[in-house]
Amino acid sequence: MEEKNLKFMILVVAYNAITTLVKVLDRIPKDVWDEVGEVVVFDDCSSDETTLLAKGYKESRKLEKLSIYRNERNLGYGGNQKKGYEYAISKGYDYVILLHGDGQYAPESLGDFIKVAKEREPAMVSGSRMLNRKRALKGGMPLYKFLGNIILTTYQNFMLHSKLSEFHSGYRMYKTEVLKNLHLDKYSDDFHFDTQIMVEILHRHGEIVEIPIPTFYGKEICYVNGMKYAFNVFKSVFQYKLFTLGLTNCDWVEPLSKTKYSPKKSPLSSHKRVAFFVPRNSTVLDIGAEGNYIEELKEKGCNVIGITLSSLPSEVKSKYDEVIIDDLEKEGWKEFLSGKRFDAIILADVIEHLRDSKKLISFLKDFLKKDGIVIASTPNIAHLYIRFCLLFGKFPYSKRGILDETHLHFYTKKSFRKLFENEGYHLLNKRFTPIPFELFSGKSRFTKIVAQILEYSYYIFVKISPSLFAYQMVYVFRKNYKI
Image 1 (cartoon, helix red, strand yellow):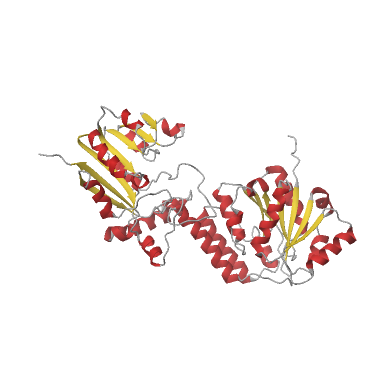
Image 2 (cartoon, one colour):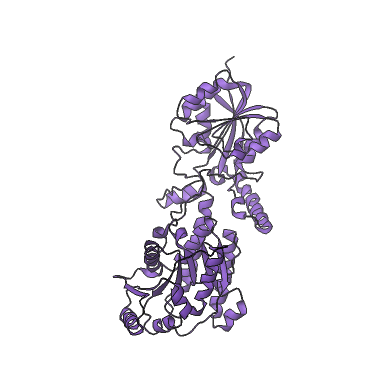
């Protein structure tokens, strides 16, 4: 197989590095200098003569590949990286390797990064000091940093369903094609920038390869506030997890697919509740179909017609007896229903997206059989989390969940019931669902068990006060008949 000709750049981030920068540049192996297109020093507006020193070094060593830039103002650790990555992308490099100017990471390992890129072309290569923890301690890593690294990494692996040995090394290499698609401008300028970039790469299912690097702690000045850093890491990862549950916004990460909601497998979930209420061997109209419960309906022997705004994946579409692709706000799809009657009509997470939901609810009455039912679900806007946000003057729209930015209406359990009753229906049954903790669980059996315990424990509160704790409401209605 022919080796691809990749272009590499080394980004040296520096701040008040006058005592260490030259030593770092001297330690870059000759074969690495020959391999890379450029070594770029970004001085983050140092208060010492770091830039002057770097320029003198360039002239004295006659290094054409060495470029030096000084920020007009201090951009912070993350902000300095952003400038460097923008530069790498603009120059057309395939990979950019991050090297610190304070000497904490060994330039002798640069060749290992380049080797991995040529062999596998991953989204990211991370130099890990914790692949061999004994060496980390022997290399002078302070015990409190060693333990803090383990605790934070364990937390991050649990929350992100990853198996990395370390999240907190600053020795990294990124594929610039990946960097182009990340929300770098929305990341923090502080030290937890490194966490946010890894979270989004994992979110996008990018391959992260870890390689061992030596640990060295010398007399370099550390500008990291450990407690603040740990808090920001915890907060960023937790915010991302709440985002995946649809409970909050996370503007530095976006959903990856058009299908916003993955099927929920928990017996307490809205998807399972909807499928439970559908009678066996019935004719079903699934409005807003996404295939989240189609397998259960087919197992019940149901004939299912789906109406959806956008096309479904072929493997999902094939499970429906028929699929109509149309906009519910338009009239075309209604002609298709002429002469048809259904045992059950499903409106799962649909009503809140419509401008005129009353019109649709009223219209559907004519297509129910005499004992036909409508099964409808929607998020609970009166959830404790939303009330808490309002208490502090916030209404945090997000890409999914209770405050999905595409929602046009919001309902409490009482107002949702009234919506249907005012259009000639009466309530037959209802269920309230807990927060879908299963979305935390990933593939690990242990985390699945933990998520299940949390979900059932939380459900106790839902039973006590659904208005405060229910994540979603699932109601079953039947139309009223005049006697």
